[in-house]
Amino acid sequence: MTDIKKGLAGVTVDETAISKVNPDTNSLLYRGYPVQELAATQPFEAVAYLLWNGELPDAAQLAALRATERQHRALTDDVRAAIDLLPTSAHPMDEVRTAVSVIGARETAGISNVMDAVGTPEENLDRSVRLWAQLPAVVAYGQRRRRGEELVAPRDDLDYAANFLWMTFGVESDPVVVDAFNRSMVLYAEHSFNASTFTARVIASTLSDLYSAVVGAIGALKGPLHGGANEAVLHVFTEIGSAENVGPWLDEALAAKRKIMGFGHRVYKRGDSRVPTMKAALDTLVEHYDRPDVAALYDALEAQFVERKGIYPNLDYPSGPAYDLMGFDTLTFTPLFVAARVTGWTAHVREQQASNALIRPLSAYVGPNERHVEGYVPDAADLDAQERPEEAAS
Image (cartoon, rainbow, N blue to C red):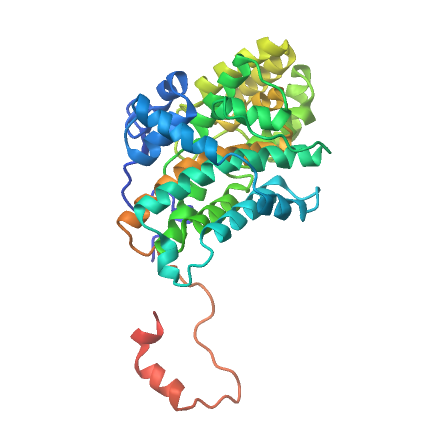
């Protein structure tokens, strides 16, 4: 009998030098650095550079990356027009997916040979930086459009995190908020062969272009079992209402066998190593906005769920309420994930292209045995194919 690994659980499909979870310390490592150390000390631009290049940048390298990123921040007319064609009731992830398709079509326009569209390693690094630079404008405009607000132009005197918040809200954010947002971007930037990253690598393995790989990754991230979980966490918080309601709500949820989003992880068995860093950022926001009720609800649900099920929070659990306190709409949470994870996705696309093999797994067929249509008479081509089954099976 074939040994089936549903969901590819436990299957090692390739090597990567980008990230891993250290089983000895339970720490997520980016290029060997514990992510909690990066979140505490580095701007997101430096972490993006690390993921793409393998080392943290020196001062000159960081300045050069920042200069390039700031050149490409503005929402271009074609992307804005494409977003405006979508109904405001469309999910923001559909806006982001559409925007990346438009950006990719523009960037590869005029390239008739599909092999040339794949790009060189240098071209794809440039594409990665430009796409990363443009996504905050896409996400920010999407939220403002749904609120009936005007587009806010980027500012080249603000770093990535501060400018992202500026384009979204039209005001300069307090340093406490900027720091919390920066940490969240670092924590979401990369996580090995998760569903969206693996999707991007599968697409890249066909020698499709980087933008197609990112569009596919966005589609995978939209699902509530992956990136959409941070959005689902806020829906749970809203449904519960307050810390006092946690016990009765959890009784009903568990009796109905509901999946409680924000808890559990395929990789971490002793708790998500990113949670303490994001929880600390959430605590600073709770104090900044004077919202002890949020902390009380968070703590009560975590304590009771862990006690009853022995399952610990993942990163989406603290990030959902943190983004809510910052002022982001719940529907914007997963697009924020895109803006961060695009650095990891594009690093993986380039790694896949550097040592490529088409990703094409096998399946165990469990359908009917061979059968034939009544009255059908095979012709010569069919008979010839039956004599050469190894060719027909490709």
